[in-house]
Length: 612
Image (cartoon, rainbow, N blue to C red; front, side):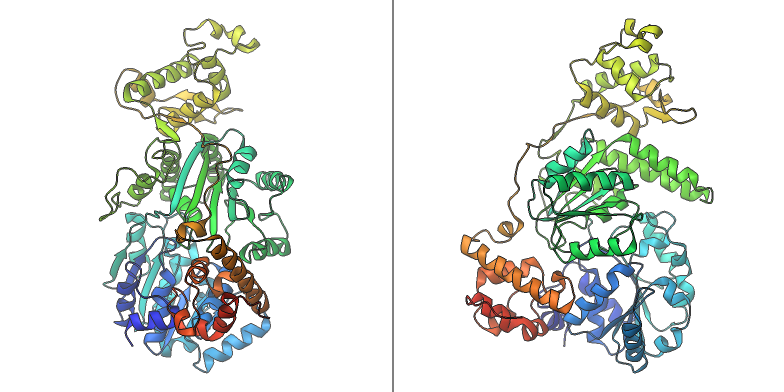
């Protein structure tokens, strides 16, 4: 069978997504490859389909232990003989996995890097291995956002399988990270397949953070009953935001390293299985979340890098339907990340430099009044708009939607000079709050004692209001015209050499004026955007199909998305197939799924209520 025939038969799709076929062809030809595809771009198919096309074993190295069992379940739904070996595996499944491997039944084996590096699997794997796939390959790079030392040792393991092709996969990699992956994993004359990083179905928004809990709640309330993830910087923030959401009747749970393992696992299990709408988690604590119908991701604090943001926000809209990604920014977040990094005295100089650049880049993304889609694309050295998509602005970010407006160049320069003059007059001896009060003309005892209430800069931006002034200070910090120093008991705001030069008209500056979207503005449900002709009856059928899927998932002990995605149920509800052959024409329904679930799905379409 051709790869297209296998795709249709096993996975129920008529055509490959960009670069999937090229990756599969490289693997089948025994050629190494680097595959960079955005979240939702179908990376897993690149190594799963070769299991079917060629006899042998495919090994997948992944750090996401929490996801492996779900990945195995999804592969088995497509008819693959898949197993996983990792530290969380219980005795029964572990014995079964070893038995399958030793009897040559296994087609697809997931392992963690630590598990592979113990070396005891080499002998069992080597004779049948046709492809070794390294997922989340950016973890190998010092310049990446999730460097893991054990990834640097993987080449030692891969060298035990000289005849097997190697495939490195990641969703996020700058050119420097891509080069590091090629070298560190010893890829041999590889096919380099880099997809465009843009996710056109995602609506990106970035606003100054003023009232964290209230701003988070406003976004959540635009998505009643839909799945969402909220990231916060500390455990305390997580607990506070989760408590606030619960008070407002939102179905949610906290998730951070300070909770017991059982409580964390239950929260993740309930969210993935759609018994929980929202999960609130620390940015620092990774989550193996593969739920396909997450409709929004909120960063209540700024992440450590653009790569982190691309990866974490990318958990929204994996099914291709519209989803919202909102980032609440404060320069203090960057200071916190910097402070935490300084506590690690073992970091080599190149890693420290990389972290500093990552903080500058995410700060620019979050505060510059420039198209968010364009900024993300340029960070990964990709053109925007992508080739073949001609458009004026993305139409899917706060800047292009007019929610954040850039000041004209002359007004931005004049405003920047006013802010910088206040910081200069304060002589770098005071914090941000003091300078804000100075610009707003708010006198207090300390200011009067210093005589600063008599300065020309006193009240210079009184009409602008505090949110705008604080936002402009953050934007000037990100652009290196101001800096927050921590060489005293309190953080102090100081003008930089670049800031002094700007005051003398040397250089340029961009400033934006944020304006939050209208309160209570409700986004249309994703299912209505999938099918423009979706009727009330179709929606009712979709809900019944989802209920069936939930019951099937509960019985099998797997997440609902493993059975099929929302987009597949939407298409069934709209097309109303009456026969197995018609069901096979629905995207995402391969032969295995129709054989397993077809009769039940058709019964629901016909108006029945079958027992599971």
